[in-house]
Structure formats: structure tokens, C-alpha cells
Image 1 (cartoon, rainbow, N blue to C red):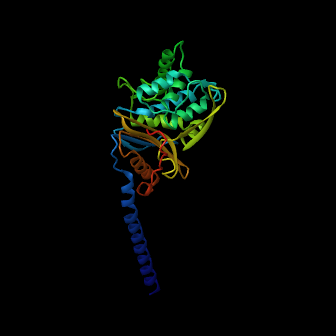
Image 2 (cartoon, helix red, strand yellow):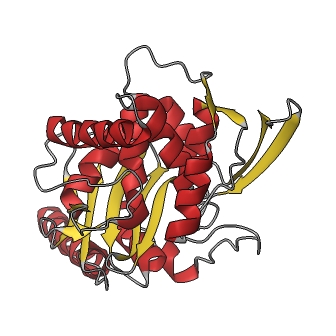
Image 3 (cartoon, rainbow, N blue to C red):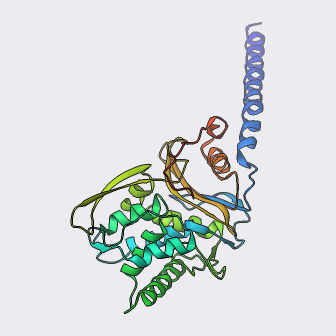
Length: 311
């Protein structure tokens, strides 16, 4: 009789255990399925794990598209990868840079002719307000040649060389800031994610792109001090938990673009959204799938001051 009782108890235990496992599966499987393949409006999108390089999300990953001002990521990368780089080197702002912004109707850091800014300050001016004048200054300062045109061309050559070394096989640059006169400034979501992964290895790059706003004192043409105030156009910063950058971009042909990254629980992901009017929410949805969270549903985007640049 005791043996029969024990056997019944064991059978009951097995049934309860099996039921618990089935119940747990029923509870977790739909949630996991719901977060594994989010639907986004982007023409192209990609997400990777920055530590391993593993693909976490992919949509038209290898289709070439224009990238607008996300181009400036490579501008910053070429500068930061320069051997013997001196971030405190001062660069004098030329009228050429301001004239270019006016002619193109481009986003600007409002650099004043004759002011002297450090390379590091120009990186902030390029990446936060998406200053095409600042990007021009960097291209002119780090290109080679006797004329501004020659140095600009040389710098763009360095951008393409860097893309090649990073295995960005479907990327080509014909500008230092994303304003492409011939439409030959393109990339793919997968390629741009490779660049993001590489760029985030630089502590300076990480610091700059994670900054929501900054005030920088530069030497004015008069010799006195001038304070520049720049706001980051990336609205994910301060809106999505763990967001650490990276760069916005908007153009007629490119549409709204976004390169983004976030860290949670020791895991960092980086991704790309190309041509998507819903870029911030879709970027959040893709990252939520990786982090197994639901932040996108409750996310409220940071509001930029009226004086801030939009990109």
C-alpha cells in the first residue's frame, strides 16, 4: 500500500512539473515571437551586437541608398583614426565654409569666420547640430593638397579608403557631409552598422555622440572668447533608456535616416534606419527586440529648443 501511494505521488509530481513547463512555454513563447521580428517602415534597417558583430535584425540590409548627414560619421571616423591626432589642434574658420552652408541651405554650427576652434570642438560641431560648416573645416584641415578643393577631394578619398578597410563593400562617398550633387553618396544598412561598430571603439567618438548639448568656448577672430551652444539632433538621447548616440540625417533623396546605439545590462547594440519617417520609434522597436523590452510603446521623444538645428 505504501509503494502504491509513493508511485501515485511520483506520477502526480511529474504531471504537475510537465504542466508547469507547458504553462511557462505558453507564457513566454508568444512574447518572444512578438519581439523577434518587429515591423518597421524603413526602406532599409539593420541591427548588430557591437561585441560579437552578430546580426540581430535585418531588412533590405544590402540595398544601396543615400544616407544624408549620417555621412558625417565617416568624416569623424577618418579624423579620429588619423595617426598622431592632436584633438587640441586649432583650425581657423574660413569664409568658404559659411558660404557653402548658405549656398546649399545646409544645417550649420554657425561657425564665425576667423574664429579658431579645436579639432575636438569641430567634432562636436559636426556631430551634434550636424554642422556642414564644421565638417567642411575638418575635411579641409585633414585633407592633402595646396588648395581647399584639392584638400576636400583628398579627404573624401580617405573616407572611401576607410570604408574599404572596414569591409563596407557597398558604400561610396562623394561628399564630406552627405550633400551629394550627383547622387553617388550611398551606403547600405549593413555597411553603416559596421562603421558604427568601429566608431564606437573610440572613446572620443562615444563621448561626443552621447552628448545631448554642449557649450564650447572658442577664440573669436577679435582675439576674445566666443561661446558656441550646440544641441544634438538625435532625439533618442534622453528618450530611450540606454541610448548612447549616434547620428541623424535627412535629405530629399535619402529621406529621414538614423544611426543609433544603446547599452543595457552590459549589452551594446548599434543599428541603422534608412528612409523612414518613423525613424525614432522604429529604431526603438528594433532595439526592444534585442533587449526584450517594450520601451518603444511608452517612449516620449526629447524636445529640441526652437533655436536648435533639425536634421
